[in-house]
Amino acid sequence: MKIKILGALVVSMLFTISCTDLSEDLYDRVEDGNFGNTPKEVDALVGGAYSSLRGFADGISNNYPTCEFVFFLNETVSDEATIPTRGTNWYDGGQYQDAQKHTWKADNRLILSAWRYNYTGIAKINSIIYQIDKSSLTDAAKAPIYAELKALRAYYYYNLLDAFGNVPIVVNFEDTSLPSNSTRKQVYDFVEKELLDAIPHLTSNVVYSKMTKNVAYALLARLYLNSEAFIGTARWQDCIDMCQKISGYTLTPDFFTNFSTQNEKSPEIIFAIPYDSKAGTVGNYMNSMSCHYLHRLTMSVSGTDYPWSANGMCAQPGVYSAFADTDKRKKCMVAGDQINMATGQVIIMDNGEPLTYTEDVTSVANAKDNEGVRLGKYEMKAGETWERDHDLVVIRYAEILMMQAECYVRLGSPDLAKPFVQQITTRAGAEMPAVIDLHFIDQELLREFAFEGRRRTDNIRFGTFFQPWWEKGTTPAYRAIFPIPSTVLTTNKNLIQNPGY
Image (cartoon, rainbow, N blue to C red; front, side, top):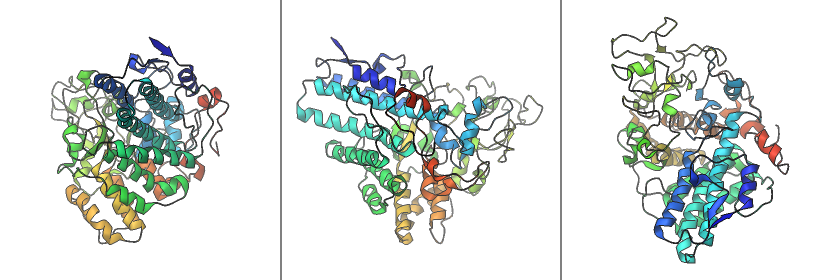
């Protein structure tokens, strides 16, 4: 028997969430208590929660975490990346230009996609918790399942806390009422409590791509690192304390092992979103969003065994030159002449000019096809399909080291930061500074985590988000969070728009 839950439909309408073509994502229908009673059935339910991390696309918005909407939102509003208009391409109603200039409005589709990605994941988890509630499992058997699901839900709410601040907290699958905003402090407290409550029931083992004690500690460390920016209360020591609880991980000797096709083998990755094209996963096409249309000719002699590229996102001017030439991480970007493997010569674009990626970009409104250094952090190779097989890295051990270093500097003990920074710079082949200060930490975060979707949060924490940079003037403080999407406000009159919008 299937049970239709009106509450799920209301929540679905409220957040303009629609389902994908996969039956596992039909949020208005859940199994009754006859399902979820065996280990296999429980694994299937919990697996559905993790699959929600890969996002979805529909006629309303594109909601894959690696796509030109969700991932690129945090990148293109930061000082790291941009999606310039090239001729008639990549204008799309000016949404990318607005992101670059910090003039976005509540109807920007990038913002809607980020909202829907997270709330769709939350709705999925709420439905699974309901199914576990109705199962015949004992309370003792349910406890670790609840912990895993609620920790994963806290990850989505952390994203919403970071991006939108004052969002509704929806946890009851059967509740048919339209929720109101919670304050940013209330969302912060909710995320913290959910993670702390989950930790005693989570495994201490290192388990790839699953919610464990280590992952929960890392998320709490992120929460405390950004606590001052989120709620005005600094919690630097709490961040350090959480980092020091994490164990079982090391830096991989080769930085790029973290971003290889088989990066699940890296001892550094604490949490990732798995992808496997042979298993039918979709949405992992970020590598095709950056390079020029003819970049396929650099991959093989035939040029036919590499997916089409969209010539979109590139680094902002100044990012590439922030790396010393000896810094191994500089190879995370593709720059300079692009060689046709069949001829050994520089590729010639349709306009007759050479395909040479330059650091300079004329303007966000009128860039040439070859302008901007391109994203190359994740492995690119011949034989790939549009849907890549590398996993999307969410948290890695390098972040744990850098969080501790930053917190020690902020607490006035830069000497205590040195052992953590030294591990990062030694692997990179970069020079260790005589004095570790916040400016160095900020720039080192740029170099270490370029194109990993986290730069906006760093910009806000360091205050640079509000300062002028390329193609952007001074940003008012209220834009530290995005507006609630206009379509969401239309659907639910109980919601109040964030201040300033």
